[in-house]
Amino acid sequence: MNPEYEEEIFDEETLDTGLWRKILGLLAQSKKRMFIALFIVLGESAIGVTLPLLNRHAIDVFYIGQGTTQDIILFGLAYAGLVIIQAYLIYQFIYQSGLIEMDVSYHTRQNAMKKLQNLPFSYYDRTPSGWIMARVTSDISRLSEILSWSFVDL
Image (cartoon, rainbow, N blue to C red):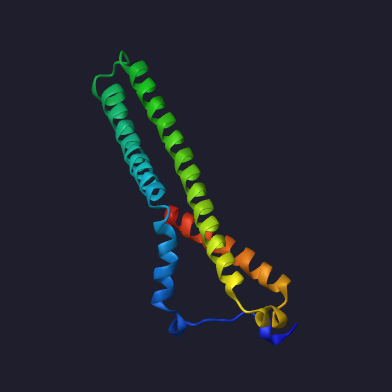
């Protein structure tokens, strides 16, 4: 393979903060969905903290405290309801993250296409179109995936 088309390896000294501003600017176009996903995560986290507290309450009241089971059905229904809500919130979060990924991918591809259309013909004489397409496709896919799903890790 032509060494001109080999992958470049960047070290920490060559990273540009301006580049990161541009990359994070891609997420700004999906700001509404990002806030929706954030509120979904906060709700899911609140339920995730509440469930163990309910377990503690059940053990203290039903088994150790009173020793009665008169309210256990109501408690079980409330607990099951919270688990169903939590599952729905997780589904919605995954759905919103997927939409964010598609938005970032779409806008990045639009910008890449504009950039490629403005390049001189001499660039296309030197650079194989297959290499351009492979780089654009894989890089945009990876970038949009990293930006949207790193939100999950955050």
